[in-house]
Image: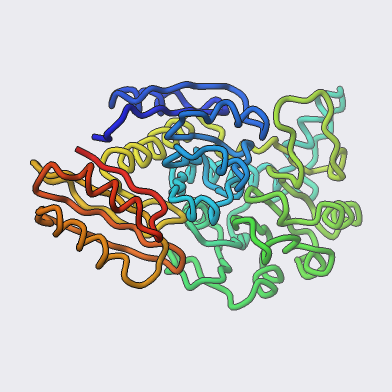
Length: 403
């Protein structure tokens, strides 16, 4: 275990299972319901080694500079855009997320929305709440036999494809990386090809420069007349003004949007958006992963990754760190070192170990262009001396020991 008591701070109403997992290993955990502001984090991060956040807390380089004792950050969600992961890497601080835990919840919501859009369910429900009875089969269709185009064939996109095929839909996908299709899903060579052939287009991409305003006026024109657009990925992907125009002109028959360019930090009395009051448009407040199952799974997945890093140095699931996972050996003293990726560091560290008269029982070094991450198991209780001398090396970023 670590050489000192570990303190954790969990923000933004993270599922209680995360606190349970960390406390079970004698980690001191403080939980807060709100996101941390830049000002509040200056105080809240004092003495904190493990930080857990969701999507609202912004961890910038400035915040990281104020937290020299911080060892690791856990994003209890899929995205990590709220963290400056490059700055965290250079601070020797791995960042973990939950790439798998809410996959099913998001895919199920999208499938439900596909059916609801095709049958105009949300629109008819809203009319009935207003006292208007409009029963009609006009422009309402079964989804069986229709074509779904998935943009981004990752964990969620591939799961969505399976569920859509179970409904009898034909499924195509577009991804910038080569992906093995599951079932009868087929890739398209270009996004434009996918837009032209799909009755429904659903987006499951990260927020990057290449996905910002990926769907603009020109690409909306490529979509089939009477088709539908769904976005449960990132709010920057679709130009909502252009989408509103495509819906008002009836080029598109409907849309379902779960993410927005600007989202309130908490509940608000009024939310304004260009898609409001357009028929057959489903708007939801970023609830794709908001199920009890998903939030618990996220809590387990990220808390486990945090614990494994704290307890044995495993970085295998980190998004910004070299992948290292060396099983703990009994009767050994473990030294963990993050250093700048420059020549000669490993030789200097092994030289120090030799000078103190210890043998290396096991060792693993992984690097990326910026840093190297080394785990060394020693056969003698000299890890404190090794740590002090390794920490003094010019290339060292962060060094700790496990007994």
